[in-house]
Structures are given as C-alpha cells and as structure tokens.
Length: 555
Ligand code: ADP
Image (cartoon, rainbow, N blue to C red):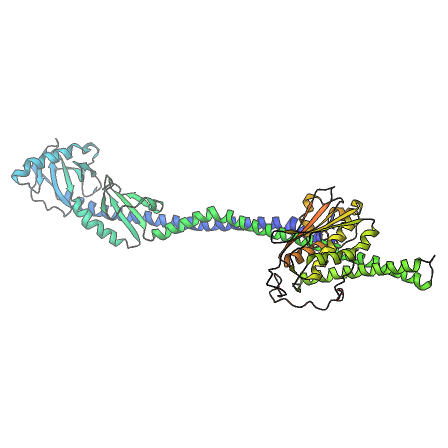
C-alpha cells in the first residue's frame, strides 16, 4: 500500500507537470509552424503581386514609349522656313501635339484645330506648357530615345498626360515637342488588354489621382491585408495599380482562423488539459482515500471479529475445563459467550447488508407497520447492553402515530446502529434519549446522547462509507465505519432522511424522518431507488430472526 501510494504521489508530482509542459510546448510549436507556413505563403503571394504589377506597368509604359518614339521621330524643324514641317501622322495614343520654338512659343498644333476652337486649344496648351520642366531635357535623337519626359497631373479636374522632348534641327536650332496622350484610349483599350495578358488569378484596379477607379473595382478596407499597390513608374505616375488575389475571401477566412487559433489554441487547450488533469487529480485523491478507508475497514472488521471470538473461546474453554469460581460464574460465562456471539452476528449482519448495498442488490420487504413497535423491540434488544455500560435509556413515544411503509428488519437495524453508537461513543453521557413523534407528513425518530459529540467538519462525512471520525480513531473505539452509511441508505430507500446535529462537547442527536404511509396503499411492495427491479422478497438471511426478534446491537 505505501509503495502504491508513493507511486501515485510520483505521478502527481512529476507526470502531471510534464504533461502540462509537453502540451504547452506542442501547441506553441504547432502554432508557430502553422504561422510561419502561412507567413511564407503570404510573402510569396505578395511577391507574385509585385511582379504582376511591374509587368502591367512595364507593358503600358512600353506602349506609351513606343508612341512617343514614333512621334518624336516624325517631328522635324525646317531651317529654311524657320518652323516645323507639316504632315504628321499621329500615333493612335496621341490626342494633340504641339511644336514650340526655342523661345517656347507654340508654332504648330496637330491635328490643326478648327478655327473656332483654335484659341481655346492654344490657351489650354499654354497652360500645359507652363508646367513642363524644359530645362532638365537633353536633346532627343533616335540614338538617345530616352531623352524625353512626362507630366501626369490634373488640369481642371481632368487627368492629363503630356510627353515632351527637346530636339535640334539639322542646322542646330533647338525646338521642343509636346504631345497630349489619349488617356481614354489607354484606360479603355490598353489597360484591359494588358490586364488580360497577365492571366486571371488576380483582381486588378487602377485608381486615378483622387482614387477614382479608372479600371476595375477599388479594394475594400477589409481586404487591405492582401493588397499590393504599385505606381506606373515614370509615365502614368499619378495613377495607382491595386492587385488582390482572387480567392481573397478564402485567404481572409484563413487569416481569421489563424488569428483565432493564436488567441484560443494555447489558452483553451491548456485550460482543457488543466481541467482534465484536475479531474484526474481529484479522482486519484478520492481513490486513494477510498482505498485507505477500505484497508482501515478490513483491519477494523478483522479486529471486530477477533475480539468476540477470543472471548467466546476463552470462556468456552473455562466452562469446558470447569475452571471457575463460585456459583454464579458458569452462568456469567454463558451470558458473556451469548452476548459476544450476538455482537458477532450483528457485525456480520451489517457487513452483509452493506455488501448487498454496494453491489446494488439491496432489497426491502415493504409493508405498512408501526414504528413505535419497531422502537420498542429494538430497545428491548439493547436494554441489557445499555445497562451494562451503566447508562440509562429514556424514551418518549407519542401515542397514535401514523403507520409507515417500511421494512421492519431494516428499520430495526437503523435504530440498533444509532443506539449502539450512542453507547460506544457517549457512554460518559450516561443517558440516551429515544423519541418518536409525529411531524407533518410523517414520523420523526431521534436518538440523542450526551457524549463528546461530533466536530462540525465531520458531521457530513460520518455518513460516508468507511469514514470514522477523529473521536473513534483517537480513542480507539471499535467499529467498522459502515453503520451510519447503512442507516442512511435504508432511510433514503424508505423515502426519508437521516441527519445529525451536534455541538461538540454537548452530545449528538441523530434524527430520522420517514413519510407516513398513504392509508390505502397497504402492503404494496416498492422498488428501492437505484435498484431498477421490483421489490424482491428478502433472501433468507441467517442473521435475521424470522420471529422478528433482532440480534442485539453491534459491539
Ligand atoms: P463505526 O461506529 O463502526 O465507526 P458508524 O458509521 O456507525 O461507524 O459511525 C461513523 C463515525 O461517526 C464513528 O466512527 C464515530 O466517529 C462517529 N459517531 C457516530 N455516532 C456517534 C455518536 N453518537 N457520538 C459521537 N460520534 C459518533
């Protein structure tokens, strides 16, 4: 037993904390692994977005640059006339082109505006030209096709893209070219074409200077986490490209699960494991207690059996050998032998009944009867023992009590146990009061002693099987710890309740309340709660007196 208990203690002390640590470590690393994996896939997703944005911006820029190249190549300055040569073939993306002399005066507008629009067109161009950074330009030649710039900004609330370059005539005369790009064509034709060329696993939107959508739907706030934003580089630099994976809802849900896991996984799993371990811990402790109580019980019962047996043997031998003094002695010896044999029977009664209850096999013969008769008979049985302890039994039985439905033998056992306890634990109190009275709906039996009483913290527990209170253990009073558990089971099977009230030092009162029988329902067998079968006749029980005279109380 101590070895087993040491092993259990080792489990409690080492294995439990180890389980908690291992679980914490597992959930932490599991979570970390899942998080890293999803971070990695997010990074590669974002990298894919970045490359696509680059491809899209590059494709558009390429087309614009090609148009610019076509234009700048065509524009020429005629040194003889001192003005631009006419007859330009504008690329499709060019809306309007101006050629300016070295003093930045507009010398030609292509296509030539109608006379009535000319003034307005020139004003508009003057406005654009003022915003251009001419000084930063190097002369454009086909060999240096990159020497031109773009201006992309709002004019009168409308997005305008101007490509401009400086050139030199054959005679070395500087002149300038500026072209207004057709943004409607770019956004309605080129952008969709380029987007289509990218393939279809992304949602793409292009926003203008004030975040109005030029193409596609702008990204919603909740999807920002997976959004990649890029600019169009050096051409449409005031516009923004937004890229979003098509399965963003899925990713969003995945991210939410991840967040929840982060918040819940470790605390919740730790809590569940802690609760589980707590339950196991409590079970182990309860098991340990029960097994300790059981081994105490075995020791107590063996002791209980041994003492009367030794006495019976000793006095039997004395009788047999005739070694006795005086006239009275053989009778006294025989009385002792009878009393000890009765104690043995009562103990065995208790143990057998208790074993039946433990196996769920308890059964009662219910019949309508009078509790005062039962009390009278039980008191007759105990009287000798009570007097032997120099105690006085006082009874107060109310007349005309209502009948109750009961198993008389079982109820007698309850009473014998209560009186036996009063004699065993409260002999110094000298008196035991047994009272029977009518209470609303039933009958109340009380057994009161004037002994040491029971400490408050033990008053509930004395009804547990095998439990023996400190007074019994410290004073070494003989007993098995099952008497009150048995009494409780019997009383509850009768639909009643047994309670104790005690002020330590001032005795204890055990009270049994049982319901009165419904007058019409005489002698109907009842099922005992928890048995699940109809009431069965009691098995022939050697410890019970068929004539209704019960054994004396336990030792
Ligand atoms: P047992 O008497 O065999 O030990 P019981 O189940 O009858 O077992 O009683 C349980 C415990 O309750 C006893 O061990 C004793 O400590 C306490 N007890 C019962 N009756 C009394 C009483 N009248 N006065 C003081 N203690 C009592």
